[in-house]
Image (cartoon, rainbow, N blue to C red):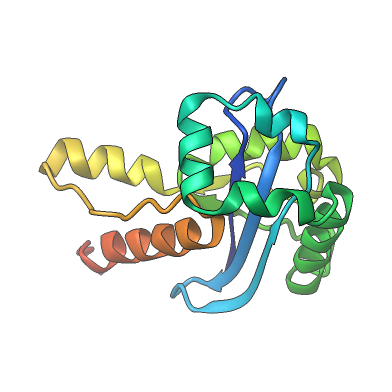
Length: 175
């Protein structure tokens, strides 16, 4: 493994059976967390999904400006095709599946599995979840990494990359 496939999504809620994806961002990095490629788009969805968001999602997605952009977003199938193209560009051999990275990425993976099956089929089953690091470091060392939590996909990925870089930079392993 020489690269990571960082991904973050914003959704209308967390229930994969009734909510939808409204924003996706992906960053390919090397293992030193240098950005090699970036993709970001708002995903067009029917208004009924925006109208049925709970109070938290309604407030945060409106405040971030995301809700207003959804009607003019990219079609979901086109978004998936662009993500698959990004994966193929950096992992051209279909046997070489990228490891997805991010914060609390199991939720994103559930939405990928349901709504983007072609992308799901190209990803490795292993994932690097920064929130796992956060749980251990917070509980073992009582250290809390401060984030802004903008709830925009690209900003959130970059914060996740910075957070994992911070943890790695502060670890010491004997060689």
